[in-house]
Image (tube, rainbow, N blue to C red; front, side, top):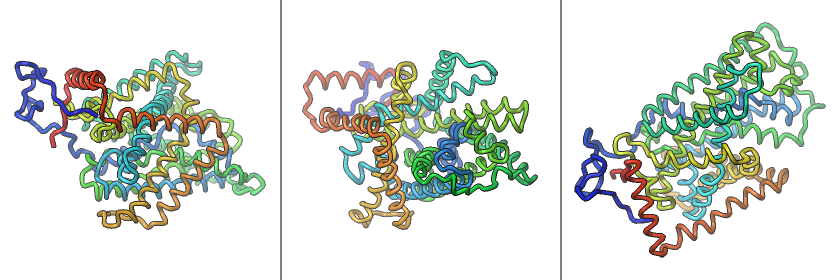
Length: 495
């Protein structure tokens, strides 16, 4: 958006760091290149995907699929089918991640296929509404469940929940600002924690099943209870539970050997997540009937109370850790999208700068913090999510449509990993069907969300397209970038 600049004092130094001949800050202690290194290994990649997909949903509310599908057997089939469809989407993104070796995820792929205006609209919707609201919601779940053992059996005061939530958001922002390596290590730990929590549910559930506790599976496919009209909504709930398989594509430039690591990490992660989801639901049904599951506010807690006795107090802690892992993975991935958008000139240039010692995209990490905190304390978060959720599938559908489009417009593009064409076609159709379902079932809120995204069009022409800005505005932008650069101790990445 503005010409690149580096802030220096008259004595040629900035905050105690040496200035190289090209005007960039150099770390006095290490002298290392200021860049985002390739620190995401296969294990870390798998932990990012699994840790982001598995949030609070599988522990709290798998009843949405049961309610809309109508029977136990159909609900399990929907879980499996949604896992397969999500795998189709993940494989499509794996192809995009190996042929377009840039970070940024959805934004980068839309930019490559359909140009900067469409990419900016996606970026705008993410920045002003979708991501802050989504972060606030998952953070509220963290705040609620981390306090649950302290207040049992009383209700938790809303102010205490918001305070715990604010502390959680602040800590995850700080962690991502501090170190890429430690962020990845913490993510691995949190991923193993949530897999342990799922194992605590699956193992006793399978033991009950092998003991012959199958009465809740009798007449599992009772056709009299199956609601064909509700199946699309059941799939919508299921696909939402699997959302998150695309986050590794946001950090492609930091992945070791991305041609092999990205597809392998995606495939391994989706197999693990699908298996965990299906087996967890089977475990629930060994202890609870369909009616009991629908009546439960937190299915995993009800399951633990019935089967694990006093140990059930640990379940809210595991749910909180699961939510924290989702928060950490989201911030790690999304900051790279804002970093790339800044590098492309569609956000202030300071967002594409790296901290001189920590080598993290500090400004890009912090950009969501003010909006998330604002929505946490002032906004109607759940209403916002209701009318913005369809935009997720609209733009994911556009990304996969771009893959199909580039098969014909750029046939010579190197594709180290290439999926059969029917896979992106089926997934693209699924995405647009869910968008149509949103328009049909809730036209008002969907229309509001669509309107918010369309405000990105005038924003694009005001801030991006027209380069001849008034001098006072250009000076203000330059001053803003220089001030933040000094405060945050960030510099342009070495090329």
